[in-house]
Structures are given as structure tokens and as C-alpha cells.
Amino acid sequence: MPDDVHDSKHAHSVLPSDPTLRVKALETLLIRKGLIDPTALDAIIDTYQNKIGPKNGAKVIARAWSDLAFYDRLISDATGAVADLGFHGRQGEHIIALQNTNEIHNMVVCTLCSCYPWPLLGIPPTWYKSDAYRARTVREPRKVLAEFGVALPSETSVRVWDSTAELRYLVVPQRPKGTKGWREEQLAALITRDSMIGTGFPKDAQ
Amino acid sequence: MSRVHDMGGRFGDGAVVPDFGDEAVFKKKWHGRALAVTLAAGFLGQWNLDESRHSRENLSPDDYSKFSYYEKWISALANMLVAKDIVSVEDLQCLQGERALGSLCERIFRVENVASGLSKGGSTLRESAVAQLYMTGNLVKTKLAENRSLSGGHTRLPIYASQKVGKIVSFHGSHVFPDAHAHGAGEAPEPLYTVAFKAATLWEHPENSSDLVMLDLWQSYLEPF
Image 1 (tube, rainbow over the protein chains, first blue to last red):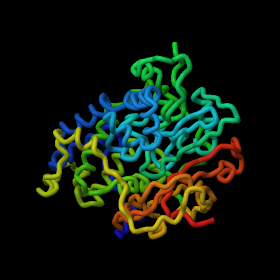
Image 2: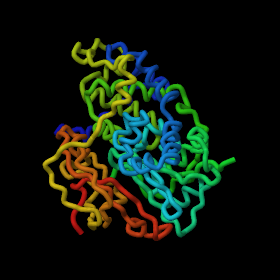
Image 3: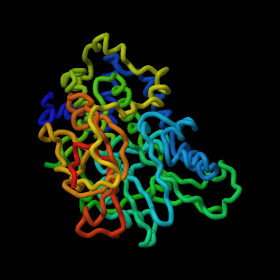
Image 4: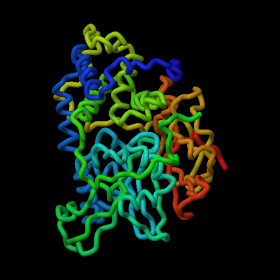
């Protein structure tokens, strides 16, 4: 085993401290060394800015609300079920779907870093990566939920899922009342990102 | 015995500030560049996911606390590039440096491979000779939240769940073991479980006695209870 644990080198400290310059410096150096392709960087940014995001997850939930067989598959094999809809890849290799009910409210955190189901929800928002969310959610989930405007009855059990391995969690919120007969696209428009993390509910039917 | 990233349960952090979905994916332009440079460099295949996590956790507590999310990424990336002899500290200083060895340049993540590369990911599920010791419903106790082989090494058992009793709720087959994989000791796959802990087991003052915290834990983190 290489003895990298007690390595006291802080190689990064020779780079400019301003983060914009710091990134630019690394990018410049790696391009010069022939190790990164600048057009690939643009394509990576475009992928996460425009192609992958919570609308993917919303499609999954809308399908689950509309199609009982898909719902059952999502609960038993979420990775396979979402792959059928075209969603798979980095930070979504092993997906588990969690059903919210009146009795159980699931919410997701990663206390050790910021693990998140990228192919379904995209890049995590700042609050998900914040120290406050990472530190407090496991200890006082109800106070954290209150900060999102979510109040749960004390009879509802909260289950906080700390993403400590490579399993990535998708919360399946309850279908809003008054949406009988709605098409999947109409349903998808009600599904918020936070409702799939467990820090919110879907929008009400208008 | 802890590192600063292991913050679950910590007091004093203040309120969470929700964005309700309104925030831009990359709030600043450099955020996107930082993500893209880090991912593209990762595709050179010179380190694995667990090494890259460990390099972020290995930032000094002072740096870890003051750096924003993507500053942690790029600073850890710079450290890893140096640790793996891909760039030198002098290269970082003058931003010049020689072109890298041809064999490494051949691994460059090209634009035409971005879509397939990002949609592929890397499963951590493996065949393993390690026998499954626990069944759903079994009570288990976690060991000390430390790397068993290397003092100060990487582990995915958080301190707040150290030496606590929980119940096995599911088994996920064998997965690559981060505690070994982060330190050049191979994938060492072993059984992975989801374990449920009662809030009252973890906290002196739980919010609600019916609440649970669920963690995904490798067999080496557990002992029978």
C-alpha cells in the first residue's frame, strides 16, 4: 500500500487561490500536456447543463404513477426499470427506488460527500452539498424538512438514507390527489426535484 | 480518529437554504469547468473513484472547511495529478511542462466519447468468494469507524454510526470495498448490506422515536450482535 495517508504535501497550494484562475490553470496545463480535449470539456458541461437533470427523474415517477407494472418493476429493480427509459450511467449504476406513503417518509442525504443519482436528477444543488444538510439531516430530519416547508405528522416515520456506498436513491413521492386520468407529461410537470430527494412534495393538481 | 468530511450529526451548522429548483446547474462558469476538467482527467484511468474521494477527504481540515464544493474537487485533482506523477509541482507552478508520455496521451477523453463515457458509468457489483454472513432481520453491531488496514485510511462507515446496533434490511451482493480500493489494495469485493438504525440508538435526543437512519455498509464494518 502506498503511504499516501499521511502525505503532508499540499501540491494544490502552488496554484492560484482564486478558484476561477485555479481551474483555468489546471485546464491550461492538462491541455498543454495533451491530456484533456477542450471540446470534450464543453460536451461534458453541455451534458449536465442541458441533457441530464430532474426532468429525467420526473419521467420515471410519472411512468410509475401511470403504469402499475412499471411501478412494481421500479420498486423491485429500479436500475433496470430506469434503464428501459434510457437513464443510466455515471453515479447511477445501482438505483434503488423508495416509496413514500402516509406511514413512511423517505429522504436522501450523503453525509460523507455528496452522492446523488446523477442520471435521474443531474448535478446536486448547492444545499444538498452544504455542510448544514450533510451534518443535520441524519440527526434532525424534521427540522431540516421544516426549512423546506415540509411538515410531517408525528405518526409518519422518517427514514433517512445516508448514501454511504454506490447505491443511489430515488424517492417515489405519492401521487397528488385530483390527477386521475392525467397523461404522463401532465403528471411529470407536477414532480419537483425535491420531491424525488424527499425534501419536498409534488405540486398540487391545478 | 475522524476526518472533517465525516460530519453526519455535527452540531452548529445553521439552516439549510433550499433553492426549490431555481438554481442554475452551474452557478458560476468555473463550476462547470471544474467538473469537466475533473471528469475528463478521471477518464485517463489513472485513479479510481475511491482514490478520488479519499483525495478530497485528505485535504487539510482547514482547506476542506473553507473550500467550496468545486474548489475541493480541483484542489484534490491537483494533488492527485502530482501523487500519480502525471504532473509535477513545478508544472503546476509554471503551467508549462513537457507533453505527457504518449501512452497516457492516447487515453485522452475525446469529445466523440463523451456521450458514451458518461452514460456508461462503472458498476461496483462483483463476484466474490466472501460468504454472506448476515440475513435480513439479523441484528448487527458496527465496528469502530476506521480503516481496518491503514491508520487514517479511507472508510465509508461514518463516525455517528460507529459501534451502534442496527438491523439488516437488505443484501446487495458483493461490491468493491472502498477501504481497500482507495489504497491500491485491489477491489476486495465483499457483501454489502443496508442496515437500519433507530434514531434513539444514534442520538441522545432523537427528534422522533419512530424515525430510522439507513446506511449501506460492507460486511467488514459489522459484527454479530
